Amino acid sequence: MSPQPVPALPAIQALAAADMAAVDGLIRRRLASDVALINQVSEYIIGAGGKRLRPMLLLLASRALGHMGPDAHQLAATIEFIHTSTLLHDDVVDESDLRRGRSTANAVWGNAASVLVGDFLYSRSFQLMVELDSMPVQQILADTTNRIAEGEVLQLLHIRNPDTDEAAYLRVIERKTAILFAAATELGALLAGADSATRQALHDYGLYLGHAFQIADDVLDYASDATTMGKNLGDDLAEGKMTLPLIHAMGRADAGTCQRLRQIVEQGDVDALPEVIAAINEHGSLDYSRERAREFARKAEAALDGLAENDALAALRGLARYAVNRDH
Image (cartoon, rainbow, N blue to C red; front, side, top):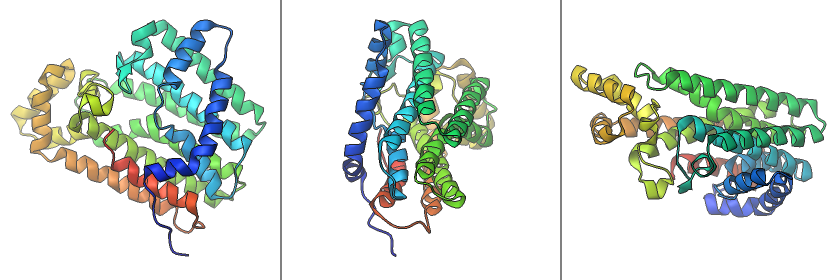
């Protein structure tokens, strides 16, 4: 059967809308705590919206293989709780003050509250997961959360390290971002009772998609603006993160420029952002990074080849294209 037309994001969101509404309802019910501060911080960050991409991926992967229902909603909520807990922790580690266009939770309530509520959401995700009473589900999520924690530490080791190369960068984003995408799509296949080859295909799709999404995100940090992005332009530089556009530019700059860029990275000198952007533009580093993101997106789509075509599979293809063609 020939592939179906690939839908754009609004059509994908419409396809998943009923399931996503069920997930949102479940998230809000399971956020509840008799500790008022937990409710305030949790609702603040969950209520900030966002695209809920990870739970949507799980729902679409499951649907593409013929499975829908409450267990998919519960696992999708579990994935979102894990993701949200990592956001709370990330913003503390990065000392961020803006996310999705408004103050971060740590900017409002402080670091201690953000870390502890992140822990609450993380442990709540495990309560949701255990209720499904599936050892394979628990194995995937236990391994995934462990890898995410490794990614956080690995990124910390590369902070303000101008010697970070593309391979090291890819190792970080695999653990920090791509591994949770892969878990979402593989869990969707698992719920549908898919065979091991199909599970692997959905895992690979999610892993490649996560790479594409994060690289595209890192391009936007140098190519967008604060209003569109919902965070401060140049945040990655201020936080000492070596992302692909800067890594590429440093690999091609002359010795004097490279030395200056090293100094900027080591100092986290956000006032020097115009110099960094000039070097990135001079060496075509945004175009290089965009093409690397597109390569991963193409691999994500290719991982789906051979699966039965339907509206949900077409939506997964659409998300691979959306990941690299967005402005926020």
